[in-house]
Image (tube, rainbow, N blue to C red; front, side, top):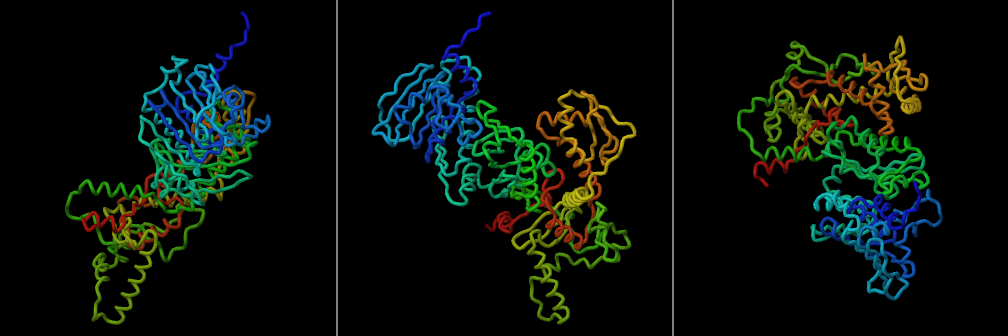
Length: 630
């Protein structure tokens, strides 16, 4: 066997295979170069999804003529002040993008530096260079790439359809536009409609750009995030838990302005939404992480799609903690999608018929009621609630006259001969009703089919799923109790020995303290086994071997032991489900109002433990449109 050095042409093709996977990879590299050049305007044009043409035009600083030839040589860059590969303050530095593109396509680059009287152009075709030569160009740089992979035709077979490749190009431009709101982007071509993202400025520039790229619907249903921990800053917008998608394509992460799709960040986002989102749905977010460049390695992937943090757990903890705090502050809020879905279902038609399921809010029935005489439940009781069951006698004794909607309707008319005492009582009742209607979830008016509460607000009405709402309230109380008391542990009479590969044993041993906080006590048992001594009491009899194996898999894939926490949350959610007001329970008006008030004061009450909305709001204008009044 003879060892020989590869030719420059072969080396360039290998580098191209690492850096250039598809047309979108070319667009990413060229647009990043334009941004690093200080461009305020970037135009991207494609044909056939970028397979036959990619043109990127910018108004950046340009390249001097004597340096143009260096720009298409390997390992040449202007983005490192010194040879410090761990202090990266630009979007790229590898110095391989342009020569890699020129090795597999027909590349033409024309640039004019501000200090020169005319532009220069250079061509690279299949690795062969021509130029530089004088040219005409207004300013900045234009790079034109034609016939991608013509020099390596086997690579063409692995490209997808023009539509799919064009969509990938669109996604790249969208991500870079999100990260650079002050830059104007224009995406056009014979294979697409022209899309323009106008430059935004001022304090709300980022929000304006997010609205351009993702729509105002997301901005209206998202909450701002801004948190700092040990020199790492997280900011951006996170969608409400009830605003979600069927896939993860609407999750955008940026590290020091660089778009990334990193497993650690995706895992942290999943953990933050763990108990407020249905398992088959995905959150929507635009999150930016800023930290010292020396605390993150951006060189772990040739296309710079992944990064490696020096302190990964710090970043993960910041994301999970900050987002959960945002959700807690959002309280009972739910996305406007639920109201639009309700309006859409109304617009498809309805079956007219008697409202047998509707009953006045003031009629007495079996249900749950706050006990005025009994003491408040102990704080350690996770089922502590403003409700308790009524037996038939209590319900009959406490039942008020079934006035209901009639009384509410009468409030709108002036009664001239009303006795003074009755008038004062009526005025006080009206004042109390108005005060409750001014609350976010309004004043309870009726119960429909013993399952849904109808409340009136100042500008519309709210429909509440009583079981889903109370289930979330009980769950949040249970979680608060667990946070104070900790997770109770049950010791094993004989420790369970679980055999694992040495690397899995090492990962679990590193997280032993973290796992102990959620009730799992383990320690290494020789080089290839783990001894489990205690398990969370909430889980009862469990498959310890399966649990430990799953935890090891989580650590290997996501660098996070989320499986145990998810199981504990699932048990807590099940307990909350069985300890809450069931659908079909008749409630008195005081009970309904108590439920509404507690929802307003409880974090995450806008969705149940399974991620479904607990309430829907309909504005008066929406109702008027249903009846043709608007």
